[in-house]
Image (cartoon, rainbow, N blue to C red; front, side, top):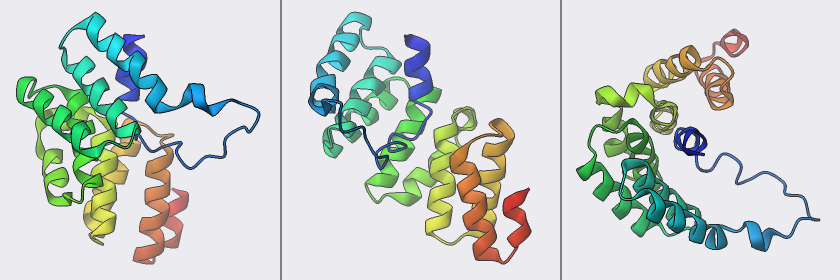
Length: 171
């Protein structure tokens, strides 16, 4: 289960938010407010590790509690400053809070290069700022690490449409 949580911490928390959900499934038992209890149990079981603190922050974000989520990840980063899993979530939450420059700055940290979420946030912030060279660096860097990454492929398509290099998206 720990490996699954680690993987989850390197993926975009909003990745499936807009997907169509099966109407025959009772979504109440799958809601993040219900699942938060499970997050809390996992944290209690594992203690105050970087991963468990990151999971608490992730769960708070999924409940749409942005301030507690950001507070939790910042507290965790202060305690575990070199953790690769926390830096991605921190960058993501900063971006979602409108603190794009701070999110982008985390990309410069050595441990950031190990986390796909940091590359995704960096690419998204660069796109938002219309810094196409920066976005190109991020999306190519992410594709180098994960050649089937859908967010990077989407980013390359956006990049090609905005730079006039229509053949780039098919590379």
